[in-house]
Image (tube, rainbow, N blue to C red; front, top):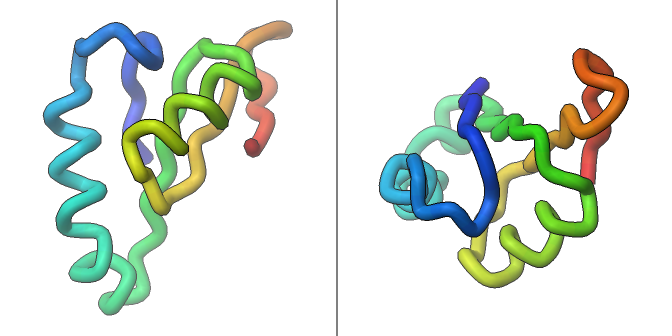
Length: 70
């Protein structure tokens, strides 16, 4: 479970790209990678497509503490 502040911000993008690049290693071990931010599901979908993320990004947009899966 990876929490990051915002999509498209550049903050923690390096870490998420590293997870993307090593995804097969985690997936092969039965580990599920999930990213969580306060962005809207629409932003997360666009960002995941732009960055090529293969793992789910969850939205805790509003109301907070209620996750939505893209």
